[in-house]
Length: 278
Length: 362
Figure (cartoon, each protein chain N blue to C red):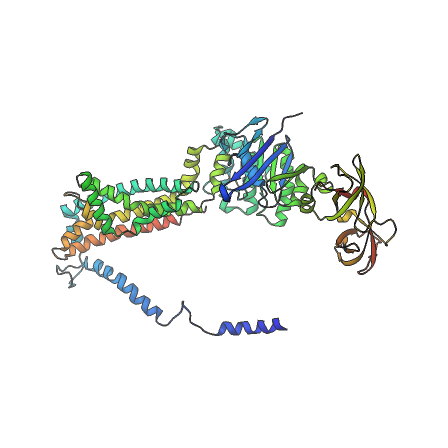
C-alpha cells in the first residue's frame, strides 16, 4: 500500500518545476550575441580582404587583387617562409619528445609521477609573456645569437604540452594487455613498438603534431622576444604592418593564415577521432 | 616420470612494499603435467591470475622458481618463452585483420610467408572461423573475437597455453559452447592448457585437474571428482558446490579410521587422512545429495525437523533444522513413483553413509 502511494507521488514530483541550470530564458539570444561577438570580426576581415577600396572600411567592389599583392610581397614571403620553417621544425621536435614522454609516463607508476604530469602541462598555464621574457633572458645569459634557431628552440618547448596531451589520451585509451599480447607473441620491445604501439598511437601523434604546428605558426609573444633580425615570422610581420595602418593587404594575409589554421585544426580533429577503436 | 610442463617451486609474489604490501602468492608449489587441462580455480584476488602472469613472464616472482619443461625461466622475457596467452580482454590488435592477428606470432618468429598463410588458414578452420580472415576485430562478435584470440595463441603451437578467464565476457549459452570447444581443442592439439577461472562449474566440466586457490595459496590439487567428493579443506568444500559442515568430537581413532561423536550424541565411523587424535574436534563435510532422509528411524545419525523444501524438478532440497542446533541440507532425486515423502514440519532422521562423510584437515 505504501509502495503504491509512493509510485503515484513520484511523477507529480517530477512535474514540479524548479530552478534548472540547463534551461533558462534568453539562452538562445545570449548565445547568438556570444557567437556574433566571437566570429563577426573574422567574417568582416575576410570580407574586406576582397574589398576593392583601399580604405579598409568602405566597400566598393570585389577583387582578389590584395591576395596577388600580398603574395608578391617579398618581405611577406620571407616572413611566411620563416614561419613555416619554424613551425615544421618545432612540430617535429616537440612531437618526437612528446611521444617519448607519453610512452615513458605510461610505463610503471614511479615516485613523482603526478609532479611530472603537472610540470608537463605547466606551460599551458604560465603567462606567455613570462615565458617569453624568461626565455629571452636565458638565451642572452647563455650568449646565444638570436635567430631562427632560438625561435625554434623556444617554440619546441612550449609546443611539447600541446603535442603531449592527445598522444597521452590515446595511450591511456589503449588496453595495456595489447603490449603484453605483443610480447607474448614473440615481439621484442622494438618490434612491439613498431608493429603495435606506433600504429595505434599514430592518430594521437598526428593530432598532436597538427596542434603543435598551429600553435607555433600563430605564436606572437614568444617569437617577438626570441627572434633576431632576419627571423621575423608572419604574425610579427603583420604586427609591424598594422603599426602603419590596416591595409586590405594585411586582411588578405590574415585570411590566408586563417585558412591554414582551419585546415590544420580540422585535420587534427579528424585524426584524433581516428577510425581505429582501441 | 615425464618432466612437468610447468612447475612452480616455492613461488612468492609480493606487490608494493611497506604498509601497502600485498602478498599475491605465498610459497606456491605446483606441478602441471604434460598435455593436461589444468585449472587454477579461486575467488578474485586469490592469486590465480598472478601465477599465470608469472608463467607468461609479465611479472617476475619475488622468490621461488618457475620451471618450463624442467628449465628455470627466470630472466627469460615473455617474447622468448614458448608459451602463449589468451587474454581476458582478448587484446586483439585492432589495426590488423584476423589473419594478421593470427599470423603475428609466427611472423615475429620469422616463419616464411607460405607457412604462415597455411597455418593461419588451418588454425582459423580449427576454431571454426574460416572465411573471416579478412575482417577487422571490431567487425566481429564477442564470441568470434574470443575464437580469434584462441587461434592467435594456438597458431604458434606453444608448449603451454595460458587462458585468463577467457569465457567471462561471453553470455551463458556461448560460454557452454566454448567450454566444450576448448576441451575439444585441447584434446586435438595435445597442448598443455593452464586455465584460470573463478567459475567452479567451468572448472569441474573442463579440467583434468584443478588447483583450488585462496589468499595466495594452493589449498588442494586433484581431479574434479577428487576436489568435489574428497575436499580436504573447509574452503574447498565450501567454494565448490554446496556442503553441510558438522563439528564432531573424536572418540577413538586408529590407522586412518575415526570414531566420532556427532552433534546430538550419535556416533559414526569415518575415514580420516589427517591423523586426528581422540579428544580433538574435527569438521565433517557432507554433500547434500549424499545424505539420506529417514522417518526418524534408529539408524539415522542426526535428527531434526523439515523447515523448508524446494522443488527443483529433477530433485527436491530439504532444509532441516537439527535438534542439536544448526541446519542441514539434504537433496533427494525425484525418481519416478516417489512422492514428496516429507512435508514441512515433519520430524525426520538424517542418515550419513560412512563414504559420504569427509573429514577435513582444518
